[in-house]
Length: 128
Image (cartoon, rainbow, N blue to C red; front, top):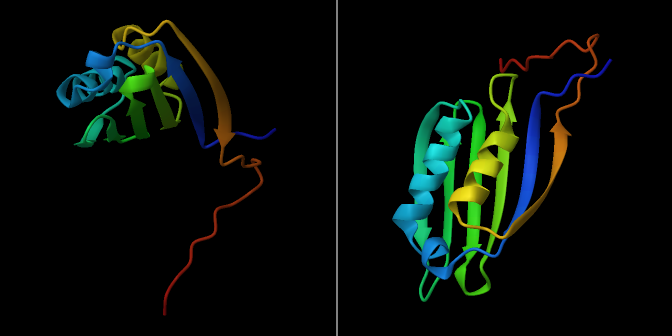
């Protein structure tokens, strides 16, 4: 039986108000809180506001990351949430962001990352 190392959700979030998706502090706050609400441990946070509009950002979590790029003029945000282990559910973070961004709808897909069979023993490279 194959067991993934992580779960990666790619979300298309539509119908969001311009003022939400163009406010770097608000987007950052929503994403940090989405990570926390999903049970993740936040490590680093980096966000950038573009001119005349748009935001890109990442919340690095112990379990991997949450990332976003917004097109406020289109009411659209591209979001990805990658989590490793069994503690954090990436869907909890996606649903939280969708609600707090005021979206009219969201579509998403999940990909299992790092599929390993139980008999695979990780190999460690040693530099001599």
